[in-house]
Amino acid sequence: MTATAPPKTSTETASGAGPASKTDVKSLGASLTGQILEWYEWSSYAVFAPFIATAMFNKGDSTSALLATFGVFAVGFLVRPLGGIIFGRVADKRGRKTVLMITIIMMAVASTLIGFMPTYEQIGIWASVGLLIIRVLQGFAHGGESAAANSYIPEIAPNAHRGKWGSMVYVSIFGGSVIAYVLGGLISIVLNDDQIGSWGWRIPFFLCALSACVALYLRRHMKESDHFKEIDSSEPSVESLARPPRTTPPTSSSNSRPAWVNILLVVGMVSGVTGAHYTWTSYVSTYAISHEGMSTQGAYWTTVVAQTAGLIALPLWGGLSDRIGRKPVIYICAVGMGILQIPLMALIDSRPWTLLIASTVGVVIVAAGGALLSSIMSEVFPTAQRTHSIGLAYSLSVAIFGGTAPYIYQWFVAHDLAWASGFYVVALCVLTLISMYILPETKGVDLRDVK
Image 1 (cartoon, rainbow, N blue to C red):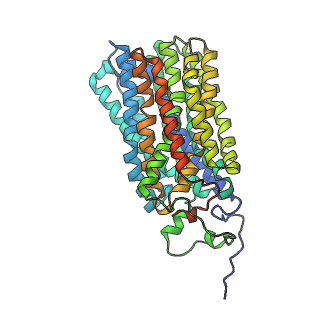
Image 2 (spheres, helix red, strand yellow; image 1 turned 30 degrees about the vertical axis):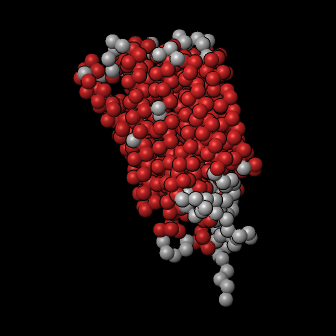
Image 3 (tube, one colour; image 1 turned 180 degrees about the horizontal axis):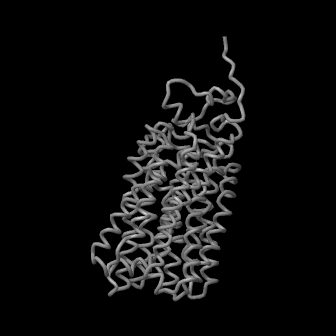
């Protein structure tokens, strides 16, 4: 006797087999809100890097202070793989929602501490040490947040629209950055540079601590991923019973390779995207201000426009990948950025319109790759190991190639080698191209079939 699957109700989901339920959409919104706030705080550090350098490091050497600031920025990324691995295992054992709740609390606490941190003039080297410790805490939390979010959103997404839904993870990154730059622009209008350097740079960190309370409330009402609930229970869930039967044989996106090979391929695939991303979202405005003499307001507002264009492009790139496949869209990103990186950087001078054109083109191209990272990674790794595998591969790539990009660029510029700095991103784009060529096409794969 064959069991008949119960009909779906409006509140039930088919775990990606059919249209998204209202619960899925609300959970997407709650996850997205928290991620935007966390990335807003993370980006605020980069936006106010010149002022933080003055407050927390030796003022005697401005280049040294700026290098030290971006060094701390990089250290925050270097602990992300540890956070991704530890929180990833928690998410694979206790649930994605649990990790998303813990990480937002950690980020709120760290943000508050930065806001109250005494300056170098007040406590000397301990200001630098304290900032370093807090950034390590933030990096640890970010590793867990990124791993859980990159698993959670694709798992609640419909199969046919996973690329578009997965792009929301990067929407949160760009969205948080846009908010940080908008606030930076507003602060630069209301306050002069001396006031910003004295106390104005602390404002974004205080605001983040307050807004995190709202995000925490929203995340309390998120559903847990149905894919996780299935592996966490020996009994099938109502949602799994509600799935329509497969009409085609199950396929696996990656079962022919050892797990460590897929991890290395994902590290390579992410490298060019993250290197270009942090160049065009975290570094170019500081470069324009510090080395090209661009006004602070001009740099901030042009960056806002460019990243808003990237925000608009993200779901469009994600939707395109749902139609033509993941590979072609990633190729557009890698080839486009590899060709244009050096000319775009050379375009920037003291005039804001040069930064506007260069950043807009750069960010929109980066968005083609960023939109697909979440969906591709979730389609490569199986559910039982998905979060900690993503946590390791994604955080490792971002730490090595993304978080260090501003420091590497600044080092080249400080040694009068600005012309050579662009080759770093070009080389990473080649690595992305090769890795994506080796990885399978995963468009529309059922996550149940990923082994």
